[in-house]
Length: 151
Image 1 (tube, rainbow, N blue to C red):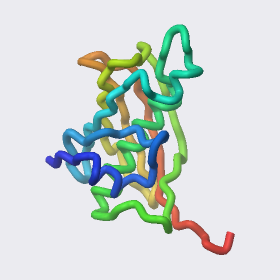
Image 2: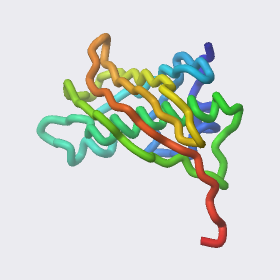
Image 3: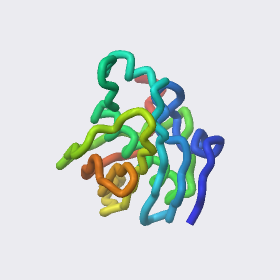
């Protein structure tokens, strides 16, 4: 199991502020599972418009955070790191469910496990939790693709 601090997270993800949604990796078992952390603060730029009178983290960003955790698990499992020659894409999002709002002050734990890998497509079972309550869950499919410099 591996604990990954923010400096190393930045090596595994190409995302940067304001789209980086992982603060730390609490556990990583390559080839199996990752548990990552996103500390949700009132300073997040999306709270200005979603919703100013009742700030709630958008569900699509919770799914994106789960996918970023999945990307770290993928790269860590392959003993690779993100670079400017490749992109980590969604291939599918299935059975997404949102059970409770995520608000400023919450510590969002992202628990992502590999379901299977087939022909470069990774399928994950993902959950987002606050305290011990599941606030969102989904099955994600992602892949790493090289960028065509001639496109």
